[in-house]
Image (cartoon, rainbow, N blue to C red; front, side, top):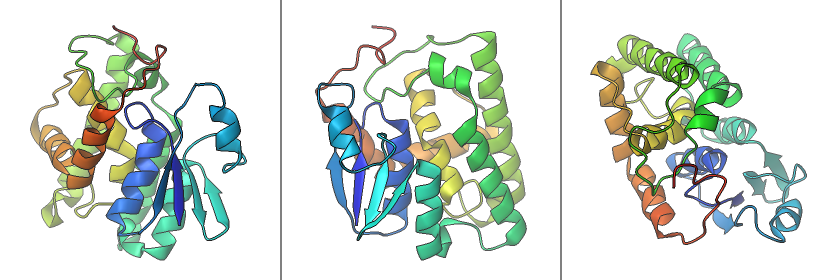
Length: 214
């Protein structure tokens, strides 16, 4: 099994697939391709038909897009989704909402693990996205928190979907209160998240378009 990913400091989509694979207990070769440099698109296309990362190659079975990769992994490791059908449907719903939405947050607060952008990135639209995310976190924790520290108790694809948001909240000093704040601390303390953050901070590549605030 091989997982093709981009820069760990910037590539939120790569993080989702990587974290799902690590939490699922998969053994895989990590192929890192630096983004937005000469030749990077050609290198990605040699692995991924979409020309984007992440892309999973499981002994010739090629799956691209972070959500599709997560679902593929969950078929092999059912523990990546809640066992209860209602909880599983909700986990898929919030993961899909994160996957397709929150464009203002993505634009105003791009993932940048090694920066401290306290106070930057806010606008009414970004703050509305933040409020919706905090509401999702609080709702999931209230409904399913009795069985574990993650959104649906045990780690699931929903947590992988929101992992880049956790790094964004850390970078931009967004500090939700209550259950959402406790969940944020849990996600940031996850050993695989810590592993990713350490690697991201060790990278030397810089993408000016992502270093929005200096």
